[in-house]
Image 1 (cartoon, rainbow, N blue to C red):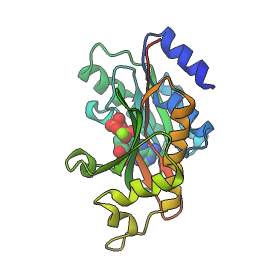
Image 2: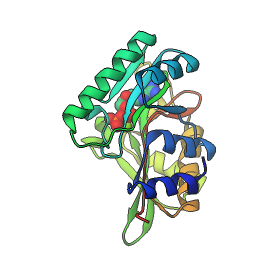
Image 3: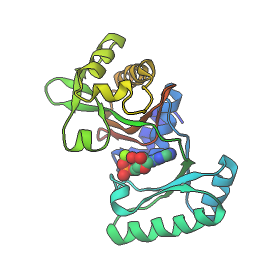
Image 4: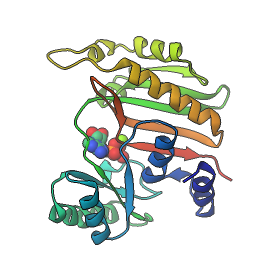
Length: 232
Ligand code: ADP
Ligand code: MG
């Protein structure tokens, strides 16, 4: 999947939101660590993809009309076997249709369940005046309630990325607190820089969110990805 192919498909379908399967495939090709996701359009497809991938897996609704998948009951974590996958598929379809009756639902994204890490967010928004701006912050309530985030204009260098990490108030959490291990800051910096390079290479990208990225003592992994492109 090349960027131009994915962009062409999205535009042909009149959507500006790339789905998680497309977004992660493009990001992985750009060297950004993300859980590999495949699109399943039927219950049986989801089950065979999950079995091929290895349990436990995660299923998530794929729809250009649903931006926040958990809000509609569209995310099922830690599915241990075929039966759990089948049931999750049915529930996701029912939940999503109930919450968003007019949503176009393409199927579900199947991916491996990642081990828990410290949740951080790496994102890009387009400022009408300054153009693409990178954002970094800690995930969950830290960003939603406390707005504890830092910004830099694209292109972001390795040094800028280090400053972005140092500037957030929650910085000590990444150093390891209360028995939690320290996060791999080099891996986080590299993720920020690679996303900056990706959006610089593709000016059609208007917004990009890796929310969350799991920060590990060794490495970092995006488990959710959202890309919004400009209209054709
Ligand atoms: P939403 O559209 O609601 O943001 P996410 O894809 O972020 O949906 O999933 C919701 C939450 O589920 C994430 O914040 C993360 O904690 C967890 N999660 C998502 N994907 C995975 C995965 N592959 N492995 C482990 N946990 C995951
Ligand atoms: Mg998310």
